[in-house]
Amino acid sequence: MPRPRKKRSVYCPPFFSDFKPAGIRGSKLESLWLALDEFEAIRLADFLGMDHAEAADQMDISRSTFSRLAERARYKMAQFLIEGRHLRIDGGDVHFRGNLIRCQSCQHMFNSAFDLALEKCPSCGSSNLMDMANAYGHGDCCLNYHHRK
Image (cartoon, rainbow, N blue to C red):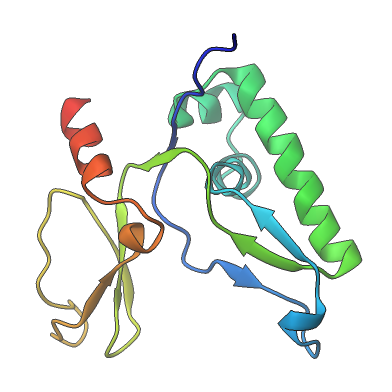
């Protein structure tokens, strides 16, 4: 029997999660799903330029697991670019270390700690805020996870 899959640590939810080629309706395209942990692997290795050992440490997984994850994510990114698919970022067994908040009034996005209660947008002062981690189905479980660590 395989051991249970370990939750991967992700810095925060992505700013954008839905991409498609211009000029083609999304309904006409085949969807391609990039899991949140695959997104994080691309962010750490390719965007931030971390080596695999350092990035694996950030995600709380082994280096070999990180390498397989990054390889799978890069293959999906290549499919998206070459085949012109509809790319969606969602899913995976992850815990966010931080949160992303979007103001529904001015569309300003900003990072926030889970234990910080934000009531107003720092840009416009509106209280119409959207918790992006909750939009990905993560809420109290992540808050409790971070307090235990």
